[in-house]
Image (cartoon, rainbow, N blue to C red; front, side, top):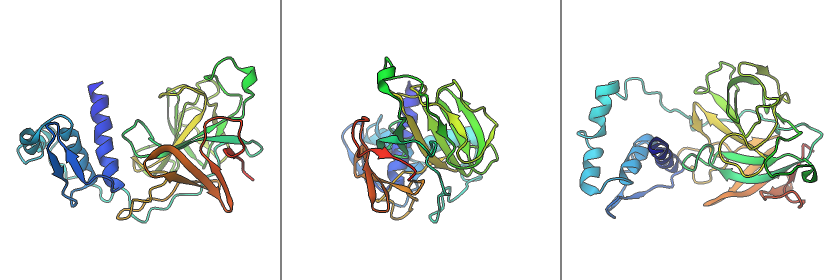
Length: 286
């Protein structure tokens, strides 16, 4: 639990910095520190983590040349020796993606931009619910009769509990290039790791497997070189990120409102809304 907490807070500082949403820190003793705006996002993540557990005196040591860097160098050597910068270029362009379900179907847009993995990560994900007849199921968590499909061609880099990673550059390494995360995919009928897929091929059936879910749906998010790419980031001025566009539908979030927002396709707009009894959250290929 401590490692998960630390990872979540490292992510929170890192991605808040990337989105230009972190200017100050409040330390554990209540001291407020204005962040140096020239430090990179990873450094911000570390400084934020230490702010959650230490007051001013210890925090100053943590972030000094006598703090974490001493231990890091002893264990791993020079942190800048193998630096790859920029990890995400400012002119990044998203490849064309199809809607992740079969063309003849109507699904439901149930979740706007939210954490790709855990609450600290970038709001990289959106949610879609399949069009099952809910009168035929006995629980909000069930294995759907409908399939999530490949949004692009690539190779399945990893399959885990509820998780499928589609690697678009085809090298099988999810830390390089574009990857697509599918979450809450049932083990029943799921694609195998190493499989090569084409756009529209079946990935698996939505369920509640993996992560946290209280209802069957598909959670889908993008990463580039291992970094979560926010679905919509109007505040990313210094380091722009491409909006999540799926089958000509562009994701639009609402500031500081996780899970809320819209998708637009020309003059059409749908709203992220839980439930399947309204017309405003229905999404189709047409």
